[in-house]
Amino acid sequence: MILTAHDIGKTLVETLRDIRFDRLFILVDNHTRELCLPLVSDSLQEAGMPFRLITIPSGDENKTLSTLQYVWQSLISGEATRHSLLLCLGGGMITDLGGFAAASFKRGIRYINIPTTLLAMVDASVGGKTGINYGGLKNEIGAFHLPLHVLLCSKFLSTLDRENRVSGTAEMIKHLLIRPDDGTALSTAEELCESDISSERMGELIADSVATKQLYAEQDPTEKGIRKALNFGHTIGHAIEELLLEKEKPVLHGFAVGWGMIGELYISHIREGFPLDKMRFFTRLLQNLVGSCPITCNDYETLFDLMRHDKKNLGDSILCTLLTDVGEVRIDCPLQKDELFESIDFIREAN
Ligand SMILES: NC(=O)c1ccc[n+]([C@@H]2O[C@H](COP(=O)([O-])OP(=O)(O)OC[C@H]3O[C@@H](n4cnc5c(N)ncnc54)[C@H](O)[C@@H]3O)[C@@H](O)[C@H]2O)c1
Image (cartoon, rainbow, N blue to C red):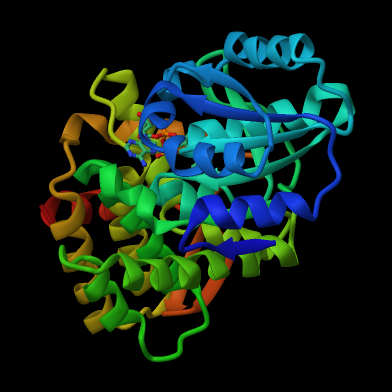
């Protein structure tokens, strides 16, 4: 269940009172231990709910097998059983790795996600995809394992830096583009990009956004069909993300998805008749949000190769999610090399 909390400590204690478990573990990284744990630990102590803390180093470079082994080992030394409960308190790195630790420990224990970054709130913490990076590949090893609950609290965002906010905002714009249109997608997208949203309003926008992720994830838990709607912007976006990582100029996921969406909106317009005025609107908005894309004319072939190796493909075709309009999704669209090159031109020209 996804719950929105005003007082996260109180909501957590109430949620835990309804669950039977023997031992409670909280997984944090060094940042969320300092900045986010205090919002829940006092309430747990007052409620007489002891927990063991497992702290791992922050950053995607630590979403590795050795960190996972450390979490398994901490669960073992804390005498965790199949009836124990793991709380994952952090961004997508914590919810992905913690979720996979929960999926794999003693063939699966229950876990609750308490996402603390915007990206994790609207995306990573929901839908049950868990895993680690392996052999230089992102999310190469993992499992589908749904959290028992996801507890959302926008108060955590007060300490988040601008870049991480932008990264989450880009995924929220994607959700507006793919959800059934109620006529508010454009105005909400504009509102999201304003800097003075109140915490309360942000809480509402997050709840709406996460409902879109939930809508697609629930219909198709293991991504055989319509869940691929969530991949809009990701075929080109992932390739840009990997290219920039290879060049040792890494960017946050949402930035790459923002550029990917600009390219895929362009292909959607050319091939699927996505309306020109809306394409221009979202291109301008995304460009203002994520800034210029640092790719050059020498990168096209590498980007093409990276797209060919995307795990979303079937055989040799590059498959992509496109839109015929806001909320009108077409999955598994095969893309040609020249279309992709044109779209990369468009991303660069939008700069
Ligand atoms: N499972 C999925 O469906 C899914 C979807 C999208 C992304 N992901 C994964 O999510 C990860 C990215 O998530 P992310 O962007 O949240 O990154 P992250 O978890 O690495 O967090 C980014 C940084 O923010 C810090 N942080 C967390 N909460 C904070 C707070 N409230 N205040 C200040 N700092 C805070 C973290 O310590 C870290 O340094 C990637 O590993 C990606 O693969 C998974």
